[in-house]
Length: 466
Ligand code: ASP
Ligand code: MG
View 1 (cartoon, rainbow, N blue to C red):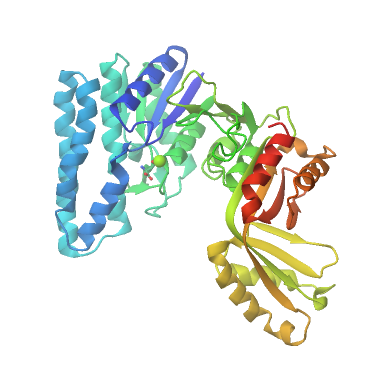
View 2 (cartoon, protein in one colour; view 1 turned 90 degrees about the vertical axis):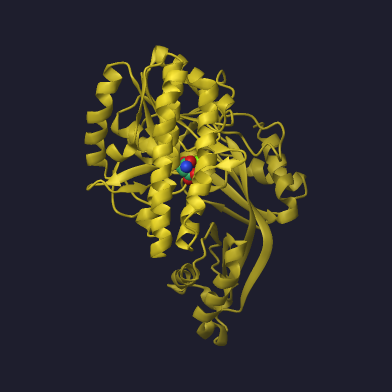
């Protein structure tokens, strides 16, 4: 099997973590063809990417020495790991290489301070350095452990547009370059250690894919290399049935469909972002989420295949405002909904949930609480005419409220789920303020008062035996 696997910043955040990574790679390689994608080191007291970005910003403010000051700490962070896990011979080559890369940034920093300007293009050089340092370190660790490995900068693989700081891949070119560069390594039994987060334009100018972009890098490479599976190594056993801080009995889900994963991500569960893994979903490549620190656990397998169980997980979004626009004159008038949504969009508020009963006397929508005041002001402005004609009589805001969502694609066409859900709420004495279910039937969402949120999650988790 060909497996592309990614290790996030915490999974490579210390010598112990990296030792674990080396073990996982050595083991996986015995059975599979392996490509690994790495984030920058995220040590508890030194977050590489954040540090580099802060130094670049300081330079723009005139502090040309900030990078030179941070450089020895960053070099130390990497070389301390090397001291434990890299052979003396390899270390001799590694230290000057990493130092040279950091020196280059220090020089660049001084120029930026003189110019007094940091372009997004220059910032991408800084922010992507952590991945470049780490790929070299981890390749050296692997070789020292007897695994043939080579660091590869994704600037030579992932071709992007020119949106510095948030670039998008050009898939056809990326496919061609990645295969040309990586397939021969795989054929020789070498494990490519590819930098996450970065790419380069057609003309070779380095870019980044946006903060947290290493997941995206891994998905892109998994897709263009036609991987059989793509594994994301994280610090949890997989996707859980709910937040374990609210429900200690929460358990790891063995399987999920792509759409269930997307619903969960949308509703605040800490899983892969749907946009990030789109290249994999489009090609129907199975995804596994696994725990770097508990590699014997099989994790969660996410694929197109439906699995047993109608309702799979319950999740909650907190700090939400519910805005209700109501009045007798909304009945049968076309275009009111469009104007309501238009106004909320102009206010820059993100609509989380919509519900309108067919009596059409009111429309209610949920938005993040911080965005509610602007949305309400814009609604009052938009509907001023309707107010004076008494067609719209009130715009009410209720907050804070919580949206609780029950997710599972097996709920489609299964009668009785909503009955059980609302029965459980009723039995527990929890008042449901609003309800929404889309016709995909992947999720049923309810709005409850903030202080009932956690209890609603517990009640649902228990009554569905999750
Ligand atoms: N190092 C990058 C960041 O911190 C990318 C990543 O870790 O995914 O945003
Ligand atoms: Mg990260």
